[in-house]
Structure formats: C-alpha cells, structure tokens
Length: 273
Image (cartoon, rainbow, N blue to C red; front, side):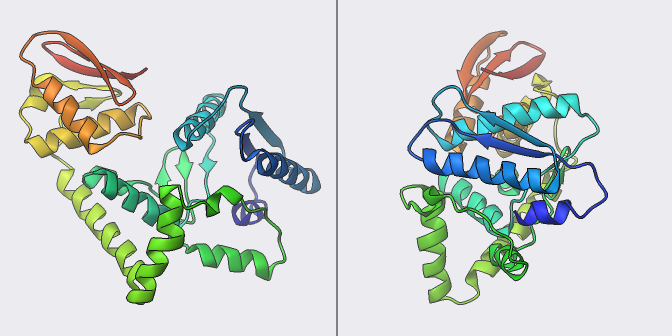
C-alpha cells in the first residue's frame, strides 16, 4: 500500500497486479485482499489486473511460480514496462538468512537488487517500520495476511522470534547483520566479475566450465539456473549437479533443481521442467 500511494503520485502510466492464490486455508484473507485492492484502484481510477489460481497451490514456491508466470506474460506484452515491487530491508535480510541456513554462496547472498531489469525494488533500503509509519501518518489503510504470523514458516520464525531475540540480546545487531551481509554480498560479486565463463541464456561452454575452480563452478551453475528464472535450489543440489557434470561421457541428460540438464562435448544447457 505504501508503494501504491507513492507511485500513484508520479506522472507515470500505472497498473496494479493482484494475484489470488485460489482456494485454501487462507481463503478469507485472499478474498478480502482482492476486494480491498480492486476497490482502491476503482477509487483512484487506476487499471486493476487480477488473476486467480484455478488449481491447488500448496507452498510458497507454488505461489511464487504462479505470480511470476503472469508477470512474465505481462512483460512480454509490455516490453518497455517496469515491474515495481515493495520488498524492503527486512525482506532482504530474512531471505539472506534463509539461504545461509539452507546453504548458499556469494551469488545466493545477492538475493535481491534495487534494479534488476525489468524489476525495480525502491524500498530495499527502507525498514518495515518506516513504511508502516508512513501509512499511519497519512491515515492510509491496509490489510494484514494472518499467515504472516504463523511461526511454522521459517521466514515468520526468523521475523517474529529469532531476530527480536537477537536484537534484545544485542541492541542494534539486526541493522549491523543486514549491513554485514550486504558488504559480503558486494565483495563476493566484485570478486566473481571477470572470472565467469561465457554465459548465454541457459547455456555455457563445457570446457570453460571445467576449467573453473570447484567454487566457481557452483557459482556458474547458480547463474545458469537463475538465467532460466529458477531460484529455489540449495547448495546440496548445486553440488549434485557439479558431480553429474564431472561425468566424462560425451552426452547425457539429468533432472535436478526443477531443470533438465543436457550435456554434450561442447555445451551445458539447462531449461525448466
């Protein structure tokens, strides 16, 4: 809502995208959210584009894929357009911590960028409380997703239990932790530049890949997956892919991390399932 109210003041052609995740345990909120956003768009005469899942979506990964599919379609129809998202500093910190817990390298620490064409995230330097205060000071309403309070989800446990406990134990630690991870991410990205093999969309030269150190190979595999919009993979999966690519045979195929890998004497190719 903070993003909506700021963008509507700009001299731009604005559209609002809302994704309804379909039937499920959070049904009441999903219906309420769609009605709230649609009414807001009507009040300010802003085009509303809503989509609803017609199949069961059972995980955060399913939700993300559903949203991304439709946003990708919109980008094809509006190649000059920009997708603006409201991720803030706390979202970035939580994502980085989750990736560290699951296993990641420097590329995984990057997580989100302010600008990653066609996506713009103008709030990555804002704290969540700053956005909440901005809304309260202007008497703008919003709706809360009740599932965001459920600690059975790792992100919610980090947000509502672990980080507050850390902050209570060491005041100011949350900010310094976010700052440290940003520094590590930037340093890792700089170190990786200029040392990558020749990468094209979903493919790289096999000999260039094999000439890399093991750690560079893992980073290259992560970039190949990301180039195909595949982001939910673990360090363990990357190591398994690395092991499969060490196969001396000329041509072979395998499926890992939501992707089909095709290897021949010249190239390594990856495409989504």
